[in-house]
Image 1 (cartoon, rainbow, N blue to C red):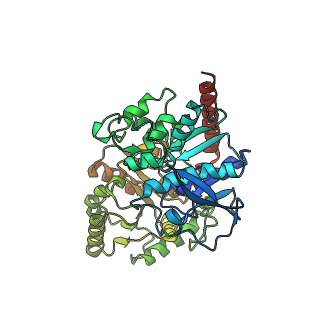
Image 2 (tube, rainbow, N blue to C red; image 1 turned 90 degrees about the vertical axis):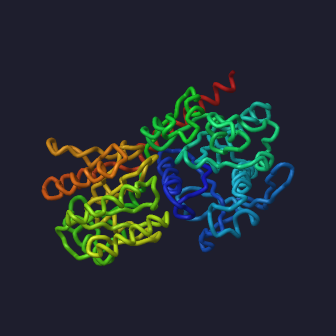
Image 3 (cartoon, rainbow, N blue to C red; image 1 turned 135 degrees about the vertical axis):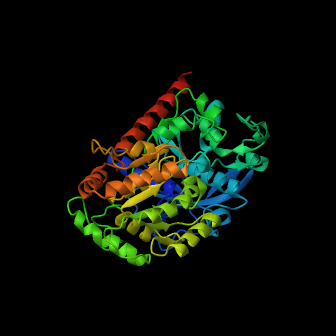
Length: 482
């Protein structure tokens, strides 16, 4: 696997969580899975590594040779190789956001392939995650076409979020060694043709492509969700597979979570009340056991539904409920939420920061968890919330639609509350249904138990990924024959 993020070493969100967990589940099924990650300067230098090769190795970039190194992380549950460069990674405090990001990830991807050759190890499949490794399928395809790599590995590409594509200019086309083939015609916008789109290249040339939920796989084939690549996605004769993410059920376990004041399980739910009280105290809210506490852990951005949240806060307050929000993002949402917390200090608790331990306490102490996303390829928050006994309120999009079953008060079936139109009225309608159900403890505890009993592990997803790799190998075999 080639990826730009991997928990707990370097990550900003769901991509890192997936790459940090999926390899372990695949190895349990007998697959020899190894991961390559850039050796960012932000990675804790105290993490022990050993050289995976004797010396540095050459990374060709348009006739210019850069030196790379590869270190093997010790005490990791799977082989994790850190691809190093003094120029591109070692002296950078952040993962992304640099003017030379195009060069940086060309170097990483090419360096990972060169490292494999240096170690004399070739996988059956190279699994590329998101745009950062999107050129790898293009390189391998070009090598096959030239007859240089007749026995090259198959390639699989996972799209974690289609909105992030990796757009760069002609200098990156040259650095990547793809100038001879020129730019690909953009499927919807001719003005974007003279740009190198890493993700589009991966979609076109990978032997198999998937995204992280079945609903999102269908959504991205439409102009509304396709981010101007929907024609290219529709061209794939083998389709786009949808594989719902899992979560690390060891790291996210309310029965052993060290960040919770009180651990609990589906068999001793009464202990969970201590977490709610502690969370209320931590955020400066009145400690009231019977007051419903709504939680939200999110990037504070419109596409996460924050533009729906501000209009419904007064209605949440009118219902006597409390709201706990953790996250950072758009300054506009910082200001709106800060104002709401000042106007309603007994009802709105706010933490404008990145704080994973507090996130765990919100999952483990809130009664209701809000995810009103405009679009959500998969989402992990709703899976963690259910495992921790917090009932999700979600919009029916992407992985939220695939993982949360709307509660039916007549039958008692369901694991959360789902709304469809991206509208604050519909959003609050779902919240109101949740608050009404909260008034009936037996129904609410049954909801909690169903959510906590849901299998959100990586086991099923890992088996489906093995099937995807088989499809990639078959596509590779068919291409070789033809």
